[in-house]
Image (tube, rainbow, N blue to C red; front, side, top):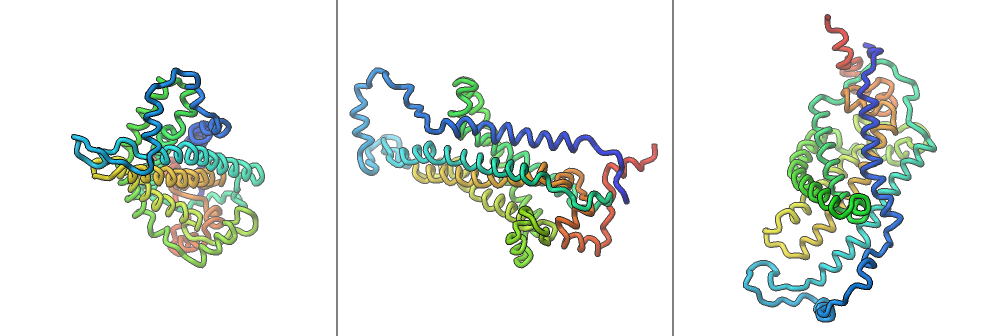
Length: 352
């Protein structure tokens, strides 16, 4: 069965929208910070009137270890006035997590751009056959796109909370950033529980396909998936790179959920140090998954011809399946499932 000559216009628009979102929201806002990371924000208070109690509080903060006093408020660490670990956490966040994560994001984005300039888009070498192969069911596509919306919202709001003080205050002013940060915090908290449910559903939905086929997957990795030249290695329904992305999302998501719950429910009697460590782990896991997400989005959109339509229409071209997932194609061929009709074709065949 051949594809209809009339192509839907929503595909290119969706592709452009995804690219614009990634470039404008997750990459470009990081650039000012990359170049201004060493700016000392404390210089703005230079020349201010000295605080007569400054020497006293410096001496309090300079004490070694945690000194607990007494307080009428009973609870975990309620008698601790100054916690030295808090300064270490703040320095890690400001001097390491924020600048180095910006370098990681900018580095991954730059590497993908360089690859695209050198290799261009990965085309279907044999051209489109016009024959469709069913790849993802409607249920699987709904699971995927719900996860996309939830995770992209969490990533965007998390990036705003991480970089906003350095990037958005100069653009929006303190009041504008305050409102943006409040909305981002609210959305982040709302999407967190939804992410837990989405991750569980997604993990079970695609688990069978993500099981390692050691020999096939090892060969795929050794040949770098054929992206650096040479013959494209064999793969099943999803290749070793896609399996790596699946496990990065699942395992990284578990870390994000666990650390997020520690911060979300401070009334579970955990102390400051546990919450500070959870915050650092949460940030590192988020940087890892978001950086990996850049690669996934690139290959699923501009990086490879015929890839995005698998998750929009649910079908792929026969030649694309042969070149990218030959072992899976042979299985589909044996089952007699080659030549599926797209929803566009079915609608075109309906009587007027």
